[in-house]
Amino acid sequence: MKKSLLIIAAVLALAVFVLSLTSVRALLVASTLPDFPDWPAPQPTLAAGDSGEIYFPTTSPYDFEVILEDMGQARPTTGLGFLSYPESASAESPVPAMVILPGSGGISPGREHEYASWFNQQGIAAFVVEYYEPRGFDQSSNYMIRTSAVTEFDIIADAYSALKLLGSSPLIDDSRIGVIGFSYGGMAARLAMDERIRAGLAAELPPFALHIDVYGPCFQILNSPALTGGPLLTLRGTKDASNDLEACAQREQELRKLGSEVVAQVYEGAGHAWEVERQRFFSEDSPYLSGCEVVYDDQGRPLLNGDPLNDYSVDASLATRVASRFSSSLRFKDCVGYGYIVGRDEEVRERGFADIQSFLDMHWGNRSGAEASF
Image 1 (cartoon, rainbow, N blue to C red):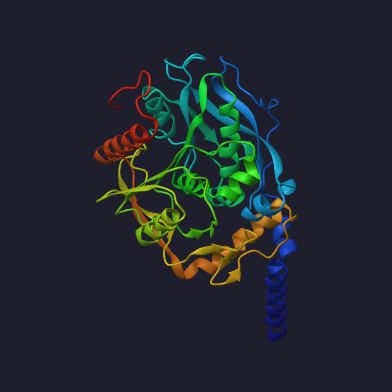
Image 2: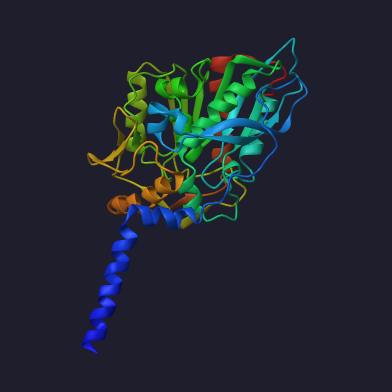
């Protein structure tokens, strides 16, 4: 009996050791990752009549390091977006445009497409980016796997690819293209202000004219030496634990010190995702970070408490990157909390639209065909 227990213990120890090997973890992850879809050839430019579902060329860099050091390692990807115009758009009178980046749950009823309609009513074209499906995931995919396999830097790559696409339309004023994101997408919209990112992804383009971060988490410090110059609007709620308001205020102040205008609105009592159709509730299982900050070095490598989070090189496979992201999550255990308010809040939703409209009026002035409210 004792010998059998020793054998079992040895086998378990060996299994733990084998699973701890990066190469083994990568093989296990590779077996779960979906293939990128075989879609129609992407279109690099827009004609005047193009709208609705648009396939466009983009990339999947996965890591900040790839954007800074070697975009040759980024996987070419066919992106997907949904383009709509205000009735006033014409080649004689081109309109501004907004790139819309969804949250980590994907395009949600009540939010992204509804914002696109609202922007159209404001005299602004809108392009809703779908960033999961181009990389093989859909709403039925496991949440942790898809958010580990599609990063904020993939979303930023899609945003800059959309900027290039929209700028080619004869109906759009390429000097007035902005970006708005929600939660995961809000974080991406704010991080896209880093001039190194624009240089790595779209050096030949003018930058986004403005940025709007709607409840994007603030635990990342890029240590940006310079910004693209566009102003930023942030919208957050005091009952949304996914936004550490102290950390967010620090990130916003860092952007101000680098010369960007930042308008920050914090709504008392507001939770997370106040635009979605699901009614407001306390989501007990929703995780958030508080007290941890990921700091990036000059090469774009993430550090936690001064130690590298990744154990791979810039040319690592996607499976290796995802496996490392999974395993590194254990190092955040002391600063992970659960539970915060999520869901529809009509009052906050209307305040958000009003603040966005004021921000747009400030920077883009009166727009042909714009309506006063949603």
